[in-house]
Amino acid sequence: MLNADLHCHSTVSDGTLPPEEVARHAADGGVELWSLTDHDEIGGQARARAAAKALGMRYIDGVEISVTWAERTVHIVGLAIDPANADLIDGLARTRAGRQRRAEQMADGLAAVGIPGAYEGALRYVGNPDLISRTHFARYLVEIGKGDSVRDVFGHYLVEGRPGYVPHRWATLEDAVTWIRGAGGVAVIAHPGRYRYSALEFQALFDEFKALGGEGIEVVTGSHSPEQYRYYADVARRLDLLASRGSDFHGLTDGRASIGRLPALPEGLVPVWQRWV
Image 1 (cartoon, rainbow, N blue to C red):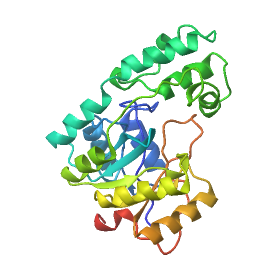
Image 2: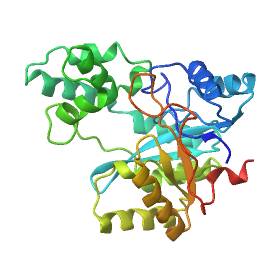
Image 3: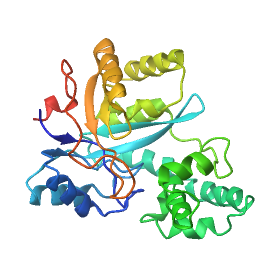
């Protein structure tokens, strides 16, 4: 099985390492086919592509688009996109809009429970001010001792019903899939095991995704357990979806899987990368 990692982040969005360093860790992990998929941003693609080439890896241009579906956030990865596509560039710019105001409201919520200065603290972790996110707040909260890990402080402060949570309306599912396909890419549902939908809601999500032209689903990812690998492999087979694999790497201390160290895709799946290699 090809060692492909098609879901990673850099300081261009909410990762902790620049694209060149992410590329180096991918190469050190034995990755043969790599994609940098920063949130709602393609500004790191040229750097990632050049670094991958210098390190002897094949590279696929990528992005991860934030979507609001059924009042919750879903992420759609776009692979093999054209980063110069005007509609994609414009759509991502509109998706990024409003993050600063949301961040200020998150800081207000945290201040109300005795955590002042969170906005300024989060900014210290931001590589791209247009993309300040909950992850940046989480890193600051870990720094000041509000939890042992990013995952820990998310659960206590930054998810729905907690003081630092502020909903944001992102792109629609139709927007994301349309932008990706219009840029020549393949749309993939990222880490489905993270979404809290009922079985009926999941089926509606998958049906709409496929009807819009979506083609893939992440099966093996740093956000999934081995049981979820098997479950979403069955989903991919049943719905005739291409299977993807990616660490969702954000940095060396964020508790996700290391680049290149994930298990292979389960047998009987069609890898999303079959058309590129």
